[in-house]
Length: 217
Image (cartoon, rainbow, N blue to C red; front, side, top):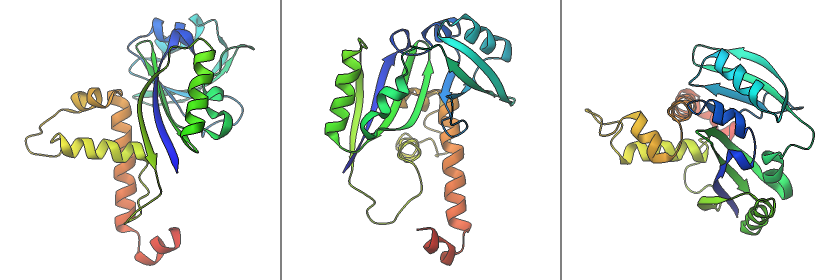
């Protein structure tokens, strides 16, 4: 039985503390699938000049490269100075898998899947031993798929369930996206991205022929 945990960690004690202090309105979100050699980060809610200045100001950043620029987000490859505390590496030790990691207003929030609760406790103790004030906000056990299988991630499913519970899909809406994002403890941009990916998955499942779905599953 795997375990999913959500941590809240002060950036000043972990990674990019100066950058997040320089641009508190910005959201830095890990995109681990882009680069195999160094972390890639989506930066949203600020312009290119502010994002670049944030990286320039942070003494832990050795190099950075702008990879993608859209109307709402910027994607950077970031190389850190040797010896910098690598939060992701600490969480990945002993089989941890980072599902989501985003930082804003001086804090990092991270969702990690662990093989079991014992591994979670080891990661917690390891962070505490490093001098980090760890806030373990949520823990849930995943026993495997029951009933109908779904390709939604736990975060996407949580967002949709919360939206349904709070009346986001009702007319008129019972809650705004900004309020729902605050309820979930994530940025407006992160929630919007979860919805987009969840809708894409649901539409794909609905339109995909049954024979193809059975092959995928």
